[in-house]
Length: 117
Length: 107
Image (cartoon, rainbow over all chains, first blue to last red; front, top):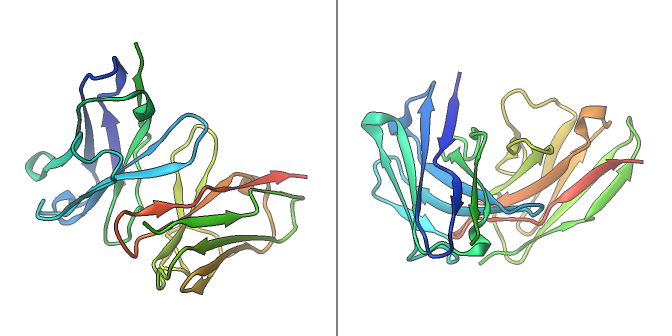
């Protein structure tokens, strides 16, 4: 069974940093592209960032460019999102989602990030 | 950036009725359009990808159609478990974008 489990969310002050993790199981993680998607409270879905299976291709939303960094460790079946210079508007549930072969077929349960003073 | 506009914002229907959800793109996304269902407190679930391919385990009452800029998700006969919010998403070009969602509520 495919599982994606996020962790690392929490309360952080504006300007602070947080590192999210997503541990995968039940599939060959190293062969899959991966994504982060977020959802602010009561709002719709927003794609955040994408990384290819071998980390050779990375794409990010303009809203997080220069502040968030996606990375992965295929040996540990793990996906990461380093979030720096956090703003109030980054408050959201952050989901990791598979990117291939069927994009966004598998999702984690999400981890809540709250940016507030 | 490709903007996806979903309509209507809310659809009020009864179980057993047919639901037709629309997604319009600001420019062509070819066939790279997907649909997701989300229930309160849950992660989104992929229903349809590449316009018309049902994801694993998705009932046949869900079907997708369209091309270019105009797409439709049809639920042929609403089951009580189908009342939820539905999002379309394009992966034709970066950045990937989602529509604003259509809420299907019980009439």
